[in-house]
Length: 381
Image 1 (cartoon, rainbow, N blue to C red):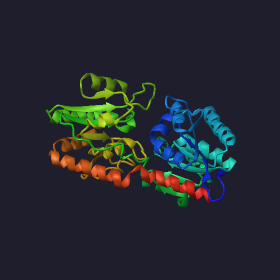
Image 2: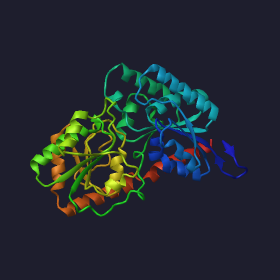
Image 3: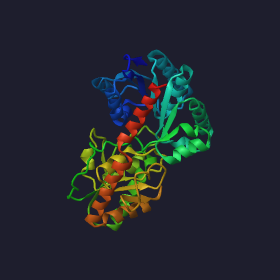
Image 4: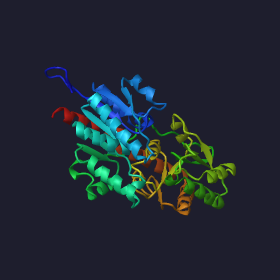
């Protein structure tokens, strides 16, 4: 912590860490810009990827770290934990803002020994909390130990917060609630509905748990019931080496027979949001609050999502879209048909409601102001 003199503001050294540089750049850039504008020193700690080199352009430092997000190899985990300890001891931050599971766990343990102030963000719980096995037991025990001495833990939906409190993984007095990662409502603005055809758009990694296979089957059901040409677009990466990805053969057949169109991720998703008439996320994965739905809502799009934890947060059923049953392609197809057959005025009403929800409940200023308030509070200690 650096003081600039009598009656002058205190400059904090802040580390922001996650399991990819991509995540930090895409989800936390606005927060980092706000902190830099306040004069604070920022360092991103994340594995090296194509986005790592961008932080310097914003006056933000970067320190690489070894994190294997999908690994459960104990040697990898120990290496990651000691890497956090080494970096935090070397950089001596005043505060660390931590995102994603391994940063939250191992970063908190390192910070505990070094007496560094910690603010964690739990953006969904994933598979570990849905199973009853040894790995789930270990993960929960790690959370309980790692979060014992942290200053604040933000959750992105009430269900996750309540679960952590009920399982005594976090003290209720430090468990805060934020509207996901928020959305930049100035960047993601409504546009005139595309008049050429009708498009249902899925945005995200093509994971089985995000409902990709349900989306494909629902598209088949839709085409059986409706002869009007409609596009079903999957916009996202499909890593064939990842066992959690949607079935490769199923995807290939669906693309080949024209059931769906698969597009690789783009730098600016607004290009395809402008094309979409409805954004669909049939995820039954334990999400925080999916950014894809927030961006679509901010762009004034009707939404269809599963009635599951996190995913249902931005959707008020029959107001700005529809909720379908998890793991039920028939339910999803019924909601798609229902929305498709709405009069244009009704779809536009839903789009307007989505925009209002984005502005009032999920504006990223709510998130940024919460973090700025914490930094201000820490400087007064």
